[in-house]
Length: 294
Image (tube, rainbow, N blue to C red; front, side, top):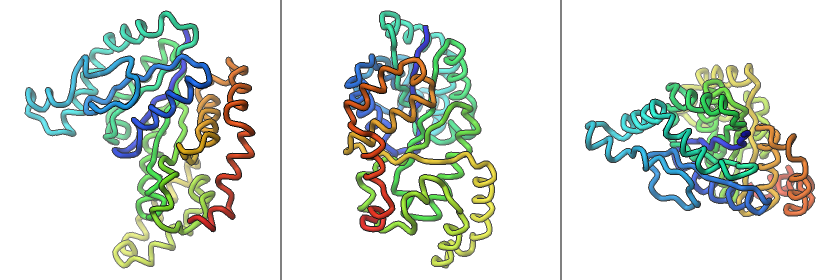
């Protein structure tokens, strides 16, 4: 049986659990049978209806006590333990999906970025799921706060690119917490510059305004050159307060994991729920609005 789903990743504090909660509610509104699977052994505060929890297999506190490891080492140990015990995940996923005609699964993953840039366990687990006919899309959440600082934005660009190359899945990068972006101050450029990852040389030039960052201008320029040479990155802004923004994300993700092509009837439901999606979405993030708001 084909199972569609999302692999929700992102740095700590990027809003992965909140995203899963909102996405679960939105997809249920569209009539989909949605399950959320928590694969973060450090996340014991779940705000969504959890169908399967890694805490039933292992958790970070037990590993820290029994193996005398720190938080980061314990998290790596837990993920590697999950990889070694993939049958546990496979069997439990079969239990929760076997009675559903079209199951859809959200996987809530840990926030430790090394798991996606340096270690292979997450990648191996995903590849095993794909071999079981899981059609997955990796959703990488980046806190929109990083748009307010050029040096931090360059860092998340490199992180996002490294993750895309390592995970090897259809990828949708999302700026989360766009409803809070006004609190972070005025952006150096309009929103399109950041979402489309336009000419980053303009961004590098702004580093001269900071004496400390100016020392590393050449390094940041080389990083930007690498990002632009690959030309893989783009971002989608997500404002959870706007229904049209949520539905737009669902549409993009459906194209990425292939759900769209087998369930075209869902697009009509989305248009009825979200209104005229493209019109609302463009109105939310026009350049004129960016100039006024940011």
